[in-house]
Amino acid sequence: MQKLNTAAQMRLMDQTAMHGQYAIAPAVLMENAGHAVVTHAETAVHGWQGKDVVILCGKGNNGGDGFVIARHLLNRGARVYVYVLGTVESYSPEARAHLHTLQELADEETCLIDYFAPSDKAWDRLYRRLSSSQVVIDAILGTGFHGTLRMPVSRIVNMVNEVAASGTLRVIAVDIPTGVNADTGDVSGSGDEEAAGPVFADMTVTFGVWKRGLLLYPGRTCSGVVVCDDIGMPRPLLTGREDDGAYMLEESDISEVLAPRSPDSHKGTHGTVAIVTGSSDMAGAALMAARGALRSGAGKLFLRVPARTAPYCIGRQAEAMVRGVGTGDHFTAADAAEIIEESRNWSVLAMGPGMGKQEDTRMFLKEVIAHTSCPLVLDADALNLLAGERDFIAPYGGRIIMTPHLAEFSRLSGLPLADIKKDCIAAAKQFVREWQVTLVLKGAPTVIVSPRTLHAYVNPGGNAGMACGGMGDILTGMVAALAVHDGMTSLTTAACAAVWLHSAAGDICHDTYGSYGFLPMEVADAVPRVITRLEDSRPLPVLQRPLVTEA
Ligand SMILES: NC(=O)C1=CN([C@@H]2O[C@H](COP(=O)(O)OP(=O)(O)OC[C@H]3O[C@@H](n4cnc5c(N)ncnc54)[C@H](O)[C@@H]3O)[C@@H](O)[C@H]2O)[C@@H](O)CC1
Ligand SMILES: Nc1ncnc2c1ncn2[C@@H]1O[C@H](COP(=O)(O)OP(=O)(O)O)[C@@H](O)[C@H]1O
Ligand SMILES: [K+]
Image (cartoon, rainbow, N blue to C red):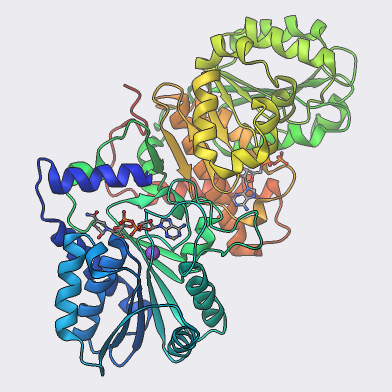
């Protein structure tokens, strides 16, 4: 699991490393940062020897990294053209020291330093320099960026993007591309066509730990391939938990929590999953949720649908035990007692996909939530029906997982869609603080938040081929099956595992079909292969350990 930090958390990390107990000299961290960029980017640019490299150095410490980069590139045989956007006095002591060293190396031939002062001539010179170079290093702004890019940075960035679009210039970003908000992934110019956009990099070498903006869209689109280098930060700072933590899920996190099946297990060991959902014209949603659960290892599966939906479901998924409830084409309050009674034998209950939005279905839903005791997975129409029902839900939140996509989340929470998109991690955490549920905010990427710790887990996988009706229904069944998977330590752990497996199965389908036309059922059918891959990759039998520390 990789930490995903905000700019403020990075500042604190830097402060603790340099001025706290560890007392690392600031120039050393900057040295390590610059050296890391040169080393990691070497393969991406097919070697530095003989390359012409433009290094754009802003007036903060990101620019300071640029001075270090220039020195190391000279040693590797490149010619460097360093554009300095700050004044010598304005730099931090460590950046100034590195600039001083570089000045000693300036020879007008292999190392040219230009204190950039905008003028027609200067712009023209920069454009020609970019056009005749093979690589540009974006050391303009790092985690200190906020708001919208201002002159002269805005024009420089536009120029870099324009020349890079011609295809001959590789763009390497230092720490984060200039113009990407490290906390949110929002970028300069979003929503304002007049404003300058961010740098679009081929590669970003980031320092210490990942910044959230490198993983969240649209920032992720600007970052290219991301490499994280620890630059010698003390280990406790790299791995310690943060108060407002966010973490990126990785394959090893999931393989460690999915316990191998015990050879003498039986169907009762693997959980009795109930899916209570569907309505007259949405039988498919119920069937897809059922398939998601079965392909994720549910021991037994009960499917309960409205009476008139049952004929479309019976026999379509032979493994599911299907029955119609009531008399109509959607659930009504009168159907609740039967489900509540049956739930005594169920390990988990999922509701919502294709359930419809009738008022009497809302009554049914609230009755079932209030009078059952097993974990509940609520998706799709169940969430639409519960919009604004925070006070009703919160007391039951400890056993509820909600899996909204962004539009459902907007309806449910009352937050405008644009605000959610601007900072989805903050929106998800705020919601969980109030509603007290485990939240799976689906999208690209999907964010899971634990109600106990308020930590956010971000799943980087999946692909645009998964943007297809029914994909979420599969996930609903998967979350339910994993919630009662042998050895899961919390609903948050189960939700993380389900989301990761779902996206990895989607990525297998992408490998086969590309971005178009693979089906939700095919994603479900790929899940066992993902689980097998995880089992095969395990070096040794592992002891169960919690993915999510809930203490
Ligand atoms: N010890 C440290 O602090 C280390 C920091 N490092 C580097 O330092 C960077 C952070 O340095 P800083 O905090 O100095 O921040 P930056 O270098 O990102 O830049 C801050 C400057 O940018 C200006 N600025 C902010 N928004 C702007 C906008 N919209 N348009 C134009 N100018 C804008 C600010 O006024 C400020 O002068 C990191 O990203 C990393 O590259 C590395 O050297 C590793 C060690
Ligand atoms: N571009 C994408 N990248 C990654 N995952 C995606 C992408 N588009 C969709 N998905 C995933 O597919 C699923 C779609 O769910 P949802 O919108 O609820 O579909 P439906 O309601 O039609 O079943 C979510 O898990 C989402 O994260
Ligand atoms: K940068």
